[in-house]
Image 1 (tube, one colour):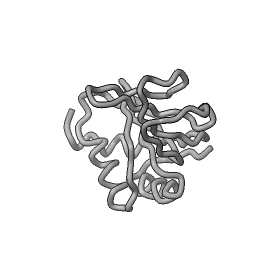
Image 2 (image 1 turned 30 degrees about the vertical axis):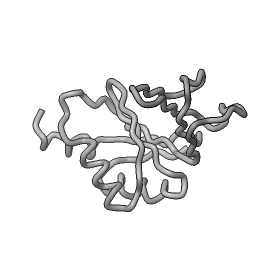
Image 3 (image 1 turned 45 degrees about the horizontal axis):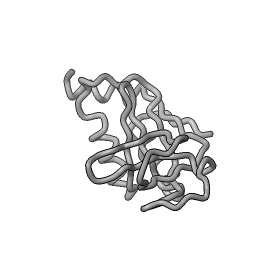
Image 4 (image 1 turned 45 degrees about the vertical axis):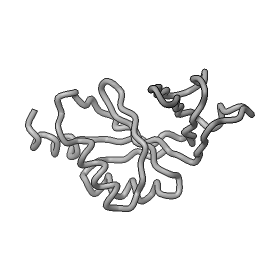
Length: 131
């Protein structure tokens, strides 16, 4: 797929803001209700809806993240989509945490930066649906 094809995804693209607020936690083992679990040789990281957290202790915790899902099929051959998204958000001063699925991507932004992130995505040409 050509790099120029990425513009079509923004023009016709839609992002959806999840109503939940998420936490990114470092744990000894995977959490049962986690949205995403990333395990490597150094750590286990879970992304979980804050309302599903119990009173357990974590090795690391950062809450207050909002999930933006790109509500479109993004083929694995697509070049430059996430580079454009992360560049636009970085240019707006928005730090991100990302999770990719087989056909779409999700970006997590801090709740206080959500409005700035939405404006940056809309500037790229996307439609953003709020909860």
